[in-house]
Length: 79
Picture (cartoon, one colour):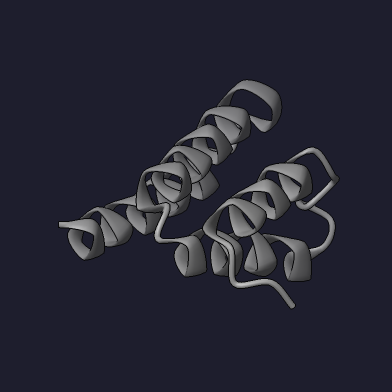
């Protein structure tokens, strides 16, 4: 209900603490909240952290590369 940038960022931060990998809706909400807040830098860091975890935890380099590609898309939007 709020349009406050800080509320959207806080919601995105909170959802990152949840198990969003098992629930794609949560990942979409994180993206939505950060983009509504205009926090492209946080969104890029989110995708980089996802890539890092895919490699460190699951050894899944393909998913990590997908996350980095998504991050690169947002870099272009943030310029």
